[in-house]
Image (cartoon, rainbow, N blue to C red):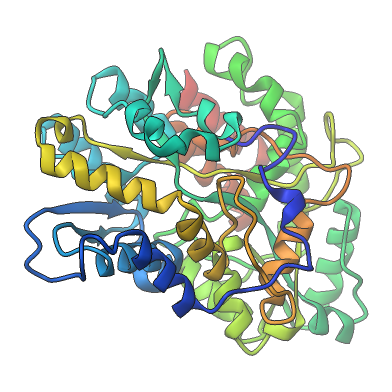
Length: 439
């Protein structure tokens, strides 16, 4: 994940940058592959990209656009996208690894990728990155997290920038200032709840992982420095620092921070409640910037990295801006020259300047050091996210906490946070739930 110094290329993504039209970038993408001609359904070399969204076009437009641009530039190679919800996707990849039926390229949590690389299920991408100097496009720290025993088993899928979107007009209407500290947030929640406004849009049904801003709060209570001790069994998750955070979360729940239907609505429905102006805050990330920009609240939306805590541990000036879970490649690809060539061509396009501009055009920060063109006047929400993620004097954790622990622990973390939010778990029982997954 991203180093504490922040995401590469941050300084270049400031408000003076210009957004290129999508069609122009698609033309650039096609230009990279013009020697192959135009896309045809009958391409003789098809490979699969398996993703963690059931509808990639709607839920991950950046990846969808990249694939379309690649396919448009070649008649001999074709990328087919398949997608499932996160939990189903993880389970599918686990089973596929055991049965030697992995797709050629796929997204996966890093904890599962590390297990797969031990079993030699993943391709070493070092030679792929060496071609055309692709490795030089990354800050070293962006690749180090996905390297094990000299094997480059993964590459960063996207930059993980998370926090709270907020409806500034709604806050102003109810006399609430944009919070900075936990005390500010708690006070805002009480005012909004008293006015009949949903303070924080949340939905845990089939989306228990949607606790991004709260995972960053764990880092404000020392998770990163405690991480290895937790994994080694030398420190319990039920330590006093984490328990203190969970008690703060309990305070938010008691104040009415979360919707009454949180357990029955999905994350997608929570996003809809925010974009329709029914909620003041949304726990989410940069991937929703384009959708929010086009919504009824687009002109009134800002972005916030989350609260600092007076009783926190360590540096409180943290904004989550780390590489997301990796894209990895099945080791079986090496046995098929055509598939290997297609995988190589796609990854080289994905991380090319053309590919990274397509990301920026779809409100995703580049993961390389490429300096994108972004026009804040046309894409204000995305620009606001970038500005908050690169605040002077702030840094990023190396990784989001759930991406560095075993899958069962990540799931326990989600359940523990939502358990306190819903009132089904006390803070004490919540931290013990996670601790049991580590024992």
